[in-house]
Image 1 (tube, rainbow, N blue to C red):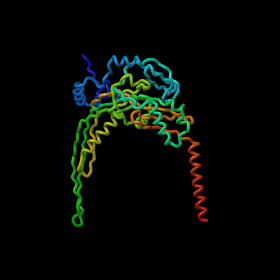
Image 2: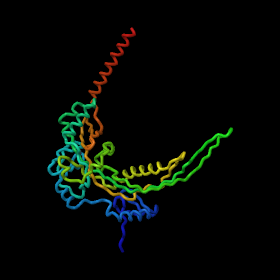
Image 3: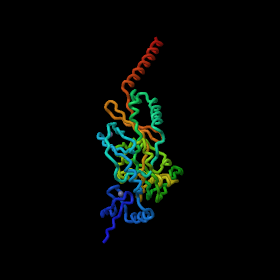
Amino acid sequence: MDIVQIKCPNCGAPLMFDPAAQKHVCEYCLSDFTKEEIEKTNAIADESADTYSIPDRELQDEFNQHTNLYICNSCGAEIISDENTAATFCCYCHNPVTLKGRLTGECRPELVIPFKHTREQALEMYKDWCKKKWFLPSDYTSAQQLEKITGLYVPYWLADCTVNAEMNAEAKIIHTRTSGNYRITNTKIYNVERAATMEYLGVPADASKKLDDKLMDSVEPFDYKAFVPFSMAYLSGFYADKYDVDKAEVLPRIRTRVEQGCQDILRNDVHGYTTVTPNFKRTQIIRTNWHYTMLPVWFMTYKYNGKDYLFGMNGQTGKIVGMLPVSMPKLLGFAAGLFAVVGVIAGFIGGAVL
Ligand SMILES: [Zn+2]
Ligand SMILES: [Zn+2]
């Protein structure tokens, strides 16, 4: 007898049946499905072949054969470059990296947003930005420091999700009028129901453990209209971070974003009542289609007083984010100047009174 194994519609892992909850549960991406949902999902899944489009074998081999993988022995970062672009230092901690060899396995990106500026242009944009920051240490824009700016393609998972959401809400219309000495309140209570199936396209989550999620969230947004099919040519002169977060691991992050969005849409569809108390019965991603992509970010690390500062610049829009070091001598100099000014003003007022 054949054992039919049901696969998770969101990440492809095998589903387990949980008798207590009477649900099929995915231990990898933490999805759960009722029998009816599985049947519905299978009907949709039959229309499209797989939840993740595995790259063409030939393209995958080409990618593996023409890329080098470097490893940083200090922080463990794994960096990819094309065979003509040698990596010498780690863009996260700036220690030397060692060549590990060729890539293996399937990690050729499907789509990429190419870097919009050359390295020279990026350096100019960065220097302009630094000019407006008063308390940066003076060697922050030194030639030696600027040398450390690295154009890095950051691996991202983009998820197209089909979501079922159901809500029932207790809604009230309250009218109050005064009649003589009485105030009469008339409350009508309604049970409002809403249900919808929604499609979300390209919900992003970065696929790199090394990168701080907050930094990566702030470097967004990227304009997805600039996505093009990946080609080795885009990697030339740049580096890429090797992905180390599986799609199942990012699904909970994506789910939070998507569910919140669905619930807001259902809630905002109920109008004309005095109060609405929503109760979301179930919001469930029933199918996910994944795209493995790369997005362009310029990175620089700066060591100041024994602390590492990492800043990132969106390689498409030029938006700059990150923690900045503050030069204590400059700050103290500024404070001393301020006291001097206050001193002069106080002296002047004192003189005027006398
Ligand atoms: Zn799953
Ligand atoms: Zn490192």
